[in-house]
Image 1 (cartoon, one colour):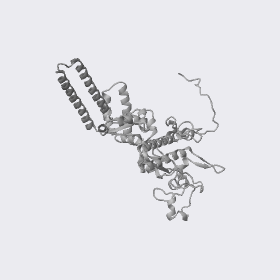
Image 2 (cartoon, one colour):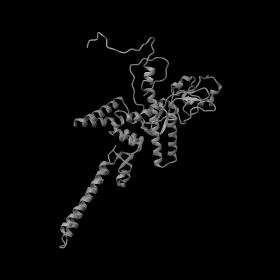
Image 3 (tube, one colour):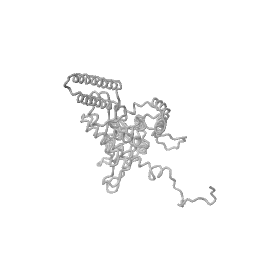
Image 4 (cartoon, one colour):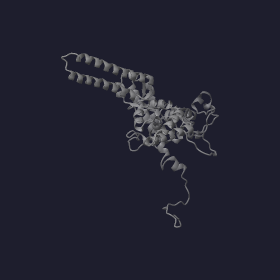
Length: 422
């Protein structure tokens, strides 16, 4: 969603349009990258540099005098500047200026993964259950298949089968020429051998036929594939694999293919195709890039929208959003370190899964996988995520934006008027 710059004056508008933000949009909104999970220094009581309340990124905590000597020259690097390089003097900008976090690995956006129907599922023609298995590193998804090599392997398997059949037939014919041979037993043995080689061929054919783009394959099945079969496919797990599949989608070509397919089908299958086609056409007309449904640059909302307040006695009360952002930053930094150290694949995968879960909880903690929702210290309540702040009766829209306080309001049961004609 693309926000408009902060302004105190009212602006006339005809309509509001919501579109999926791509990484370049997020970078345009951002005034700097948040790389540290810290908020406020406990000694100085000032925001930590490059942290979640950094003054250089989000603007000054208090209004400043632009003529102050300490904001001249080298020291000005600590102060916030706008897009033109001018010093920012008003603290109100902390309600407007956003930051960003560059993720070490792309993650799937939970709204598009878990929606009803799932937009990513409709795009890739994969069920939500199977999508979750890929996103949370329980199964591989096939990204690419070399069709020429697969056809060649299938032809080779057929040729091997025919050659083996001929060899068995010739061998048993020679054995049957011996007068002392038991022809009946030889026929049974020949039939048994033919069945065995046919079964081997059918297993190979089934393995090759199952290797299709966007198809799922368990880690065990993939490891059990012959090396020649592994060479013809490219597989992946997690948000990175989903993003690769989404990036390779050409909406125009897919819409054309599905339109032709719809004309030749009927019944339940036609309904499913129509639902998929409708969403693809909507995305195409809105100019939405399918790859934007995965997050590689995560926006950080302004600090005044997730405040931290000092209570009497020196303690701090903070918004749940800060705890959720802190989890994301910690896991992201740990994953970056593991990648730099070239850690084993299994360790990196586990960290990527944890990063995915942290971003899920940040965006929509109530929709996070069962048992994966993040609770406050002590586990008494769930932390309020971005979605929880917006939706429902206590959300920003119904609680603050749409509701109007009026004098002399009353409560009454709504009943039909006595003169109502039905």
